[in-house]
Length: 78
Image (cartoon, rainbow, N blue to C red; front, side, top):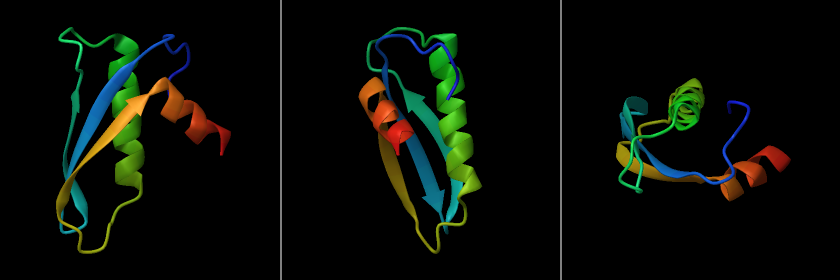
């Protein structure tokens, strides 16, 4: 994740996986505002990390991954 995270952020990363490969990654920012540069960089970092884990077997589905400061802090603590 990029440094200098804002105090509060929230978005949903949507991944479309077809035959185990990510075909599309997009973000939904629910506050009806343009995302900050940090949020865009964070979305790209998560999408890149997801593609680094390919292939996902024969999986074909759409996944919505919620991202907020609490989830990121929990993941960083592991």
